[in-house]
Length: 609
Image (tube, rainbow, N blue to C red; front, side, top):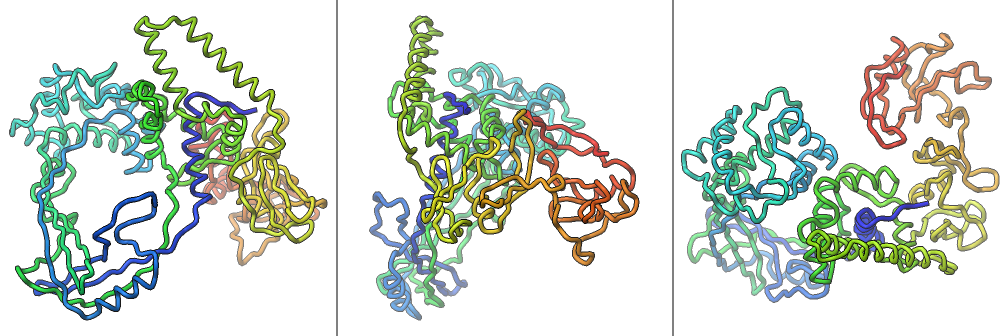
């Protein structure tokens, strides 16, 4: 059984579409020509580019990329030890301060800067609002303030205790920069709640990450009133034997609002290039061809997924529906983190570092919906349609009965499509496993909707085992090594989650390998390789050793087994450090350990004893 919804499934489809592009990506080699030039004031580097370049349908094309080695080598040989003619253009450039924070922008930047998950950022902002009273209501989709809030903002900016914040706020107030500008105060762009700003209450007793979030909001509130940052942008063209090389430079002339973030003119962020005197030529000191290859699109992080959800209306072709989604996109600021966490909890996606990766289960759902011709569940179109009609109902232009009848009609249509589906196969983007078949020794092993199947004999293995789908990488390890794991996410017939090793059994089919709880049951102890933590607290005879997947008494993994002490290195999605196991066997319990995850996906803390 699987769930599909008007927000969760289009969000999953965004991730699945990116994953399919990554899996189907084929790298293309390309070349760049780089040169180092010498002038009186020093040296600088430049990169060859095509002056006549125009973007066409080739997504990989760039002005500086050369697809043939011969052409790149020709430019290299042509320019070696030659003299270049230099021309350059200097232009002023300005950069306005970012707008105030709404929740989605705050979550996105906190993820980029500190690696905080969207849900965690919401929790921190909520605590700063409810518990500490130092921030305004965080669950907002507006980046503006009401026009009558000017006096309140001036008051807030005069209350900062932090020396740096107070200095920047005082400068803004004394310079009369805190004015009723429409970039900040705009009633037309304030929804139910205005942008997130400090309240003026003293931010005492904040923990590390609460302090980080408060500092982000406080600096943004100050910076939005500062003047634009001023830059000088230099574009230098060095032409050698008719071949152009570009060098870019950018320096801060006046930091403006960037001063609030510690930037200054002449600082380390400047991309300065050495000066060239009028009519001065440049000597080619070195020139080289660099080979590279195109890269697949990056996987989504929470920051980039939040942006995609916020801008999902751009994927809708119908102008009226796009307008209905313009303000909110997929989900709302208050629900987007819940949607992401829900997809993770239900096993559709997983978090690896900062990346969000679609699981086999998630890809299977999107593949199935496409084959059932229920694509409406995969696109923002339906969300746009419902948002538009809900807005009509709110203004009394649409009767609720008609709306609900249409919902029932859509539901019946989807159910009928599923019920009447008679396809023999489910078409989709499937993996090929680079491993030998355990039955015939040949291959290849190819994935389809329900199985991984040898193309040379009748061997196959089902993709799903105990309600958990295998990833192609896991199948590769299973076939290559004969076992994989321990893997999490299996469920018993009673619906209880468990983890286990999986091995190839006598019939070359996957089966659970519980051994003695499936933890290092057959591993031999090497006293030089495996660290001893102390005397076993159960049998009081053997030593407890750090093994590959557990910490166990030596008498619990020998034959005959005379002890039962064994503890997994990973319990309920939390790694158990060996120092805590050592404390357990010497004192009878660990410290209070945090970040265990219950079967309902909730974090909790506990002692092990």
